[in-house]
Image (cartoon, rainbow, N blue to C red; front, side, top):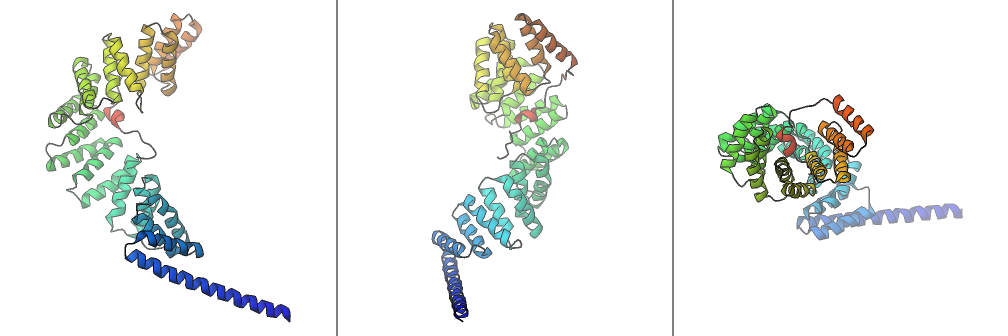
Length: 381
């Protein structure tokens, strides 16, 4: 009998506790909502956090917690709250978009892609998810994936010049040169003096093999905006490809005057100086290039040549081997290493390198400019 009395008592106590918790959740939720409506997001956050502590499986409370954190610019903190709410309530209206925005504004563009796709399905007529999808793919270096979303966005906002430039760049870096040139023509209708558009068209023409046309585009860009970063480098590189080293040298010098840390300009200027036997200046520019985040294989190759000239055989060997490590099919590096090994009396090793040179297919075409100017793609922009 006592057992049943205790059981009933425990049940009554449990019901009372549960009822009290429900009352607490209701009261706290009302208080949090009031703070939120009054734009007092700091207090709203504290109140919603209390609700979540009492009722962790409350999807609405988690969603609102993420919202008030986002409204305070705490995007990274908002992400787990939104994700918890979606796990509890996968069809929560508008939540995929809020989660995507939190990822996007936190700079975590890869994370934004999946919820943006869901948001686009949820609201097919809403252009915001499509624009953000295009920008997220662009920012993560997935240029081919960015193109259809950016194109749809441009169709909705045809006068948005920045959006169209982003589409043109995506087409270029996805090696869709006809698309890039089509957007170039559309940009010119709005801004006939767009240096950025001229540069995009120049890189696209270079990608199709029309180096002369590309040079003309970069000359137009240089005329329109002589202080724009990369315009002198682009023109210099195209001239360098054509073997016009004197005029290319001047362009690289102009680029470095605008941006002294342009590693590509320093590399190709150093290469020309090395060819002209200006070894001290060449080394200075190549060492500058070597200190930059992205280093061209030509930097190491030319430094190796300079070291070999100076009789610094161990240093030269290390530079050539580094080129081979990052570009195993670079015949010039194998050939230079073979000559160096011969000079060092290591004839068997030299013979192996020469055999490698013989077997490699020598591609005489220089890489397109867009492969050099294309950003290093992080996993993140």
